[in-house]
Image (cartoon, rainbow, N blue to C red; front, side, top):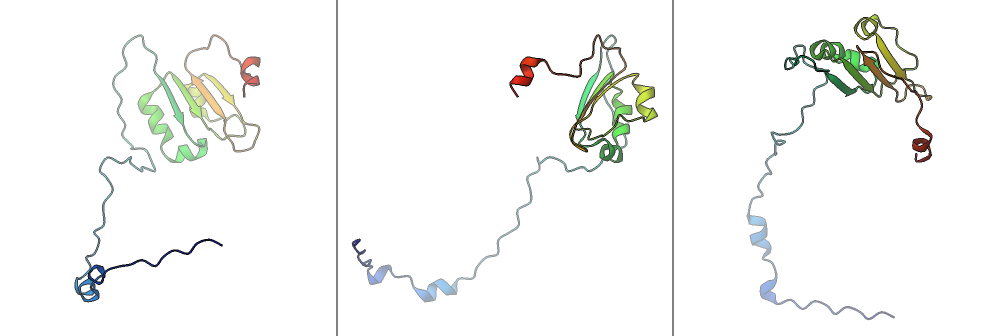
Length: 148
């Protein structure tokens, strides 16, 4: 059988004074506002977007995790693409089931390469380019597929 704990031996002077405890009014806690340096929670892109001018002879590459092509269209996707005007646009998590036939993409980017996910409405990537690629491969090398 485990030994019992001895009762604590408090002195009478250490006992809290019950009257003093209740006589002090409790103060209300003030609400703390979030720090000023938090990330913005914009649900749409601004209508007017400016980018620095492009240097001659350079290629502008932009990449964007759009979390669904359809939802990004509602949030100002075209405003961004029109403003930045990248030569190569890489989109991740497109969540499309078929290659989009939108004339916006056809007119702006003559070289379009879409990788569709096997699972419907899941993942997918796209590389849209104004420049013709040297080569295009839709598979991973054998070495990389073994490590996954």
